[in-house]
Length: 77
Image (cartoon, rainbow, N blue to C red; front, side):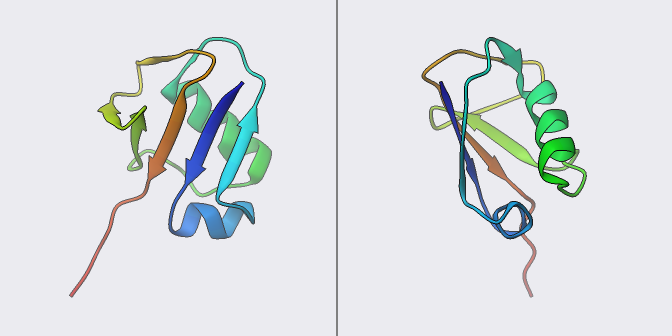
């Protein structure tokens, strides 16, 4: 099982801040696409990802037991 933590508008769109998945090995990019489709999320091409508290690229592979954080861009004024 992998745990996906959603922040900011992603949590609002999904209606939850955490998702548990039974997926096998997949990449961060594949995970983003899957979540966009299944939870009708906004495109995640600008969303940063971290695996077990370390930032990674979309090509990084996820393994069972990993905790994934998806962090949208932050703007301020």
